[in-house]
Image (tube, rainbow, N blue to C red; front, side, top):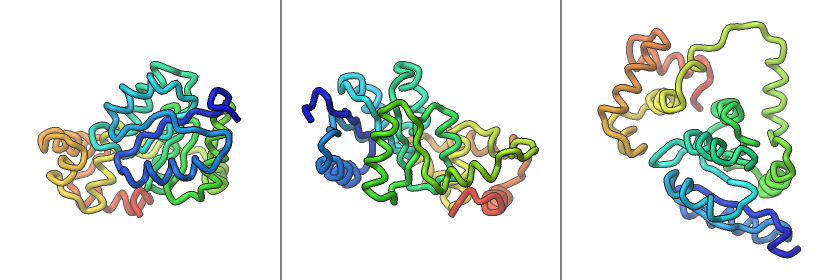
Length: 215
C-alpha cells in the first residue's frame, strides 16, 4: 500500500523508548505509517497539524500538560480526527474520562501489538475502540441508578492530582513531574478536598483505594 493510501499516525509520548517501540510495531504493518511524533503536549499541538495524520496516539500522562487537555484542544481544532489514548493506568481509571472528552479509544501500554494495530485501523475507519475488558465494565454499569461519584466532579488536573497523592507522592514531587509550581498543585489539592468533602490526604487516599482509583 502506498503512503498516500496508508493510515498516517502521529505519536505523542514523553518516553523515547515508548515512541521507538510503537514505531517498530507499526513498521511491520503495510497499511500504517508514522507521520510525526512529539515528546510533550505543547509539541504535540504544534506538530500534529503539520503531519497530515489520520490518527493521533496520545499518552495520557504528558509532562507539561495532561493528555486529556491536549485531546480536548485537538478535538476543538479537528473534531473529525481520531485520537487513541495510551496509558499506563488501568482502563477503569481514565478510559471513561477520555471517551467523554472525545477520544476514539483507549489502550493500556501493556496491550499486545496486535491489539494496537487493530485499534488504529478501527478508529481510522470512524469507529470507537474499547477493549473487551472495558466493554464488560461498561456493560456492568448499564442501567445502574446512582448519583455520580464525587471524583467524577473533578477537573482532569484535579483527578490527576488525586491519583498521584493517593499513590503516595508529595505535592513537591507532583509539581516536578507535571512541570507545575508547588503553589498550583497545592491549589488543585485544596479544591479537590473541598469538592469531595474530605479533610486531608489520608482521607483522600482511603477514598481512592476504596473506589479502586489506584492500583
